[in-house]
Image 1 (cartoon, rainbow, N blue to C red):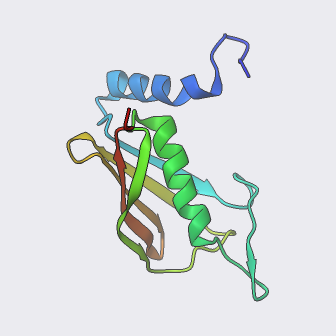
Image 2: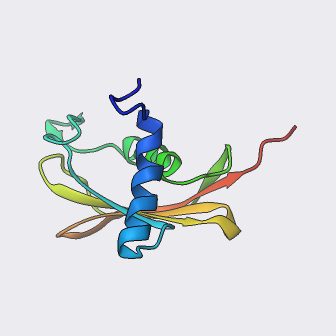
Amino acid sequence: MALSNGMTKEDIYPTLIDMLHEMFELDKAKITLDANLYSDLDIASIDAGVPILAGVVQVDWVIDYGRQCFDLPPVFLGFHALKFQRITIPEKPFTLELVHEPAKSCLSFKITSRLGTHTSGRVMFGAADV
């Protein structure tokens, strides 16, 4: 779907990253996104009557936002040092920090809130075999 200026959704993150880098000299390899699960992302996961965000949803977001923000290799190879340290509750605001490490072909991430770190790890990527 194209926006009124001709840009697609896929064009927005790289353009925004370039603008922030040029205007504020921010590191293009590190992106931080803030959100509230219910109001911003409209997501609810119910487990035993308590709303929590499932780990599989968290790592899917990491990969999805990582691909939108960075030029990652095409093949997912696995996770390293994946840690679920605290339950992520949908009503609470959280921060997703993404750090692209091209030399290691990985995307480091951390999901935090005012309570501390909830989830962290590295997603490993590789080139497609031809």
